[in-house]
Length: 113
Image (cartoon, rainbow, N blue to C red; front, top):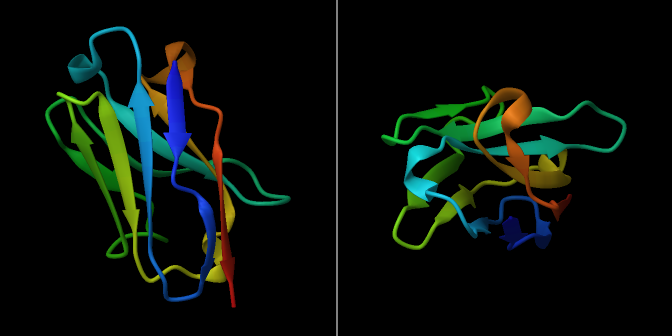
């Protein structure tokens, strides 16, 4: 089970940090990711981090978002800086890859202009 938190309303240029805590399983072996789905748009990968800490980012968030993980706490984070209105979306954390990945319930991020 994945429990995401940290979403909310923020002004453009502001920051938020999302957290996603996993329960059960061996957290450290899994790739963890943050996807997002904006209103009327398809879900897209924002960032992910491998079990050994290799990160990838969508071009739209590079240089502004940072994904990290704390294996001892079974938690993955998404630090979001310089937020833009187009970052408004429901953000979902994931554990694993492909069809066998687990998805959290999502947390809403709203960026006002």
